[in-house]
Image (tube, rainbow, N blue to C red; front, side):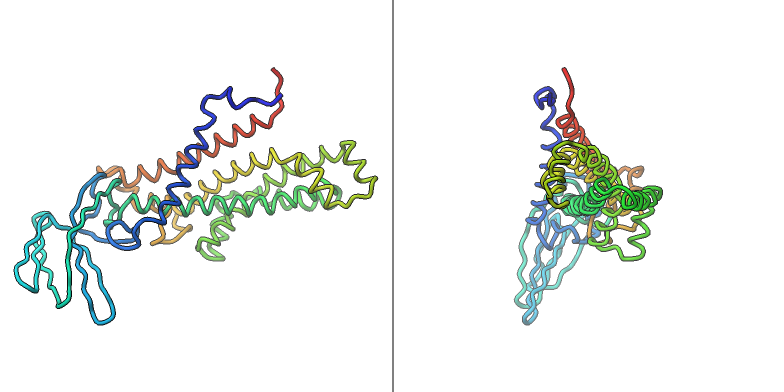
Amino acid sequence: MFVSRRRNPLWGLPAFFIGMFVSIAALSFLLPKEGPGAYDHIQLEYALIPPFTHIQFVKLTKSDNATQVIQYYPADSIVRISKNALLIYYNKKETQVALKEGSEYSLEQKIFYLGTDRFGRDMWARIAHGSRVSLSIGFLAMIVSLSVGIPLGAVAGYFRGAVDRSIMWLATVVWSVPSVLLVMSFTLVFGKSLAQVFVAVGLTMWVDVARTVRGKVMSIRQKEYILAAQIGGLSTWRILSVHIFPNILGPILILAASNFSTAVLLESGISFLGLGVQPPTPSWGNIIRDHYAYLLMGKPWTVLFPALCIVGLILSLISLANQLRDYYDVKGE
């Protein structure tokens, strides 16, 4: 009989954490596109500040003909010394700002919930945007691996013979090369944009999908209802899509969750090596690469938060894969 989900009191935790990361990625679209809350806003005056730091900013808007320039200055206090000048104090330093005709200024309060990185960029905004990159690459790489592995595995298991030997030879060749080396080679040849990265990661993971699907198809192919469908003159496509594929859906879902976690880990690894998504676009891997030296310099939040995100997402996906495996496995009491 099927194992009931209620036997595991923690069955909902993986789905909760995965949903949390998806929500963070979706909410990243609501973050400011410019200013102190933007992921690419560099201001060295407040670099490496600790989490939950409050900073007051002077927002200066300058109108120059048809263009409008907005600048931000961190400020502990502000004094208007003349009609055309401001004196701003921050960390016991003075900054004098000239005001052109038509310029306006206002005060804004900003809370850096996860601190800032070495360039003064909001760490929360960068991690939220990085979750969007990591989840996108993981999901699209999983789709690529399934799109390649399922047809090849089904064809090899159903037709067998020379077709099976050719496909399994190709799978053995790909499987013999470490995944990281394959991804690095692919990105070095074709580029390091988001599209190239997820295609490269996906093309390294189709082997496990093909081998699993091949074994399941070879087993189901001997069933009586498949033989009856063949005798009845049904096409190969109909037999595979209608009579075989629904019976191997469980293992495919397990592989999908497992490949998702593998893709996230691979993307983080190659980004850490500088071969993944390129700056200024943030990903969890390149955030760690830029700040791992600060782990021993009294500023661990620059590495700790993205590392926890990677570990949390991968553990959640692996736990989900294990629960799917338990759900679809037939076990006796």
